[in-house]
Image 1 (cartoon, helix red, strand yellow):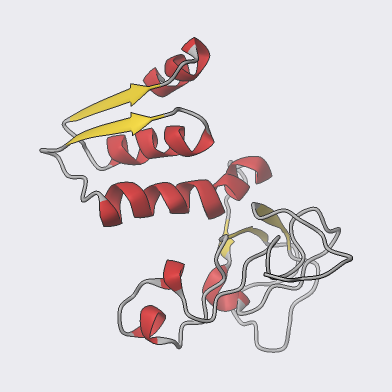
Image 2 (cartoon, one colour):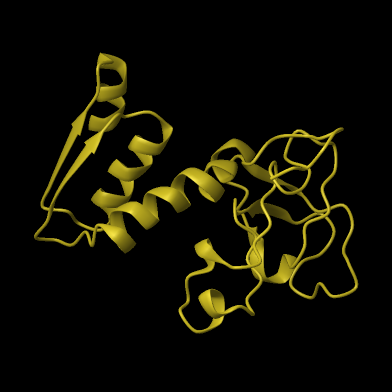
Amino acid sequence: IDHGLPFVPGHEVSGIIVEVGNDVTKFKLGDRVAVPFILSCGQCSMCSAHNRPTICEKQEQPGFSMYGSYAEYLALPRADRNLSIIPDSVSFIEAAALGCRFTTAFRAVVQQGGVASHTTVAIFGCGGLGLSCVMIAAAYGAKQIIATDVSDLALEKAKE
């Protein structure tokens, strides 16, 4: 994507709504929200006919096709479709991770990998994405989860 300069990176986004657009009905000023990495349109065939918004034909991506999370403020399109309220018990850092790492891990482990209670899941690398895969495999009841990493600290996190 040739977005030109100046540009503001950052694709993991969460924050507080400080202004609401005319078409927004689900959110109000002060709401704490998480933002997905892929802002889907809801109208294309991948969104509407196939229910696969992560491969939306008209997607926008904070930090890639528009200003990202390092900007002081962001105007996010299709807010009613794409934003999610986060509870007070969830930090902004935790919520921001949901929009990319957990979405990617979900697509890999559930949609592509087909995890179920009878499956064994192998995860190579226990950084942010790998740990998200471990959590999703556990949440879906995988029979066995095998996690590998060169870092003992990362492996301890996977065990947790």
